Figure 1: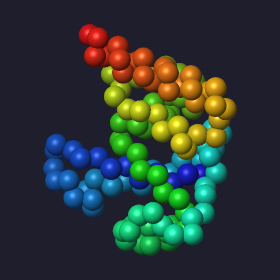
Figure 2 (figure 1 turned 90 degrees about the horizontal axis):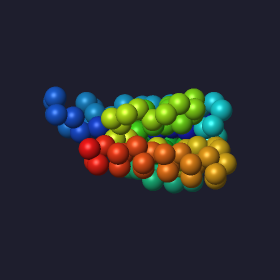
Figure 3 (figure 1 turned 60 degrees about the vertical axis):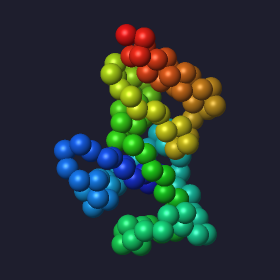
Length: 114
């Protein structure tokens, strides 16, 4: 299980952390095990409030969820996705990570080529 926090600056409301931070917990095949930390990297009340201050936290963008899920279940990345696969949380081979990053980059590039 790796703890991820989704920070999304939306256009349909304010950008306050209470409105934009969403805990996203991922575990299972392909996900790296949780890692303990001696000192929290983030100085905020969320980790303390949720009693997770001793676990490594990694923030991702909302758009990164789709490529992460696609890679984990082995389907193509969504056509119009602009998310970047968060390979740091994957517990997979380096080859799988490299192939996933390449496929992700090609998919995003194709959008810009038009």
